[in-house]
Length: 276
Image (cartoon, rainbow, N blue to C red; front, side, top):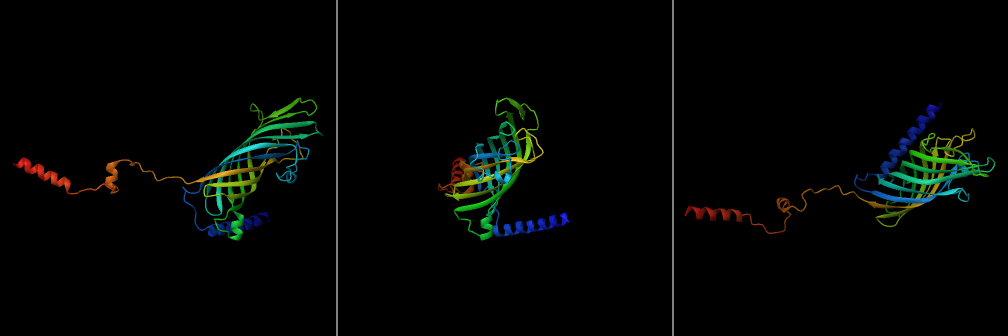
């Protein structure tokens, strides 16, 4: 029964995917529609060591904004638009995480690093068939990557060290992650784009806060950020002979007047001179 529903979902997804590429019509060339960008914002941890009990639906970035355990995070990105609707991005991110639980008399702090890739989809352009020139862009994204963390757990009352994870190779500090998110962007001009994003990161580790329990096996954090993208095209038309006058003349692009019979006249003159 499960496999039957899985096949139906897969067929519907493939139909949706093919329709989206039909709407987008043409893919961009490899050299077009690249971008580099940066984001900065706040994250909020969900897991065991949390006064909010780590419920993921209570700790989405917007709903958890008023909590105290917020930390700065920043990321750099490289983007490539495939067509009007689809794009791919790669990210490098760094930030801090923290959480506390007064009932357990413990808190933790962690430094986190992530390297991931995601796929973006312009869902409003898909459903409303909006023109590509629209200033506002509404998109969803999903991706995966690798996640590294260094966690330290201490007592709240005495600040005594309890345990560490991911420090000096103690414990499994590198884990796969999955990310899901929504974004809204404003196209300022042909080069600059500014956006707001809210992202949820999931990891299958129960040691992100250096505390394992039976109540929660899924830990991660929400990330709410502002950022920009600078767009550019790659110049792949390499002219290895630029600046060579002989090459330019052979291509016929030299603007100087060229007398094709001049060389023959010189030859005849020298020939007559030696003939005498």
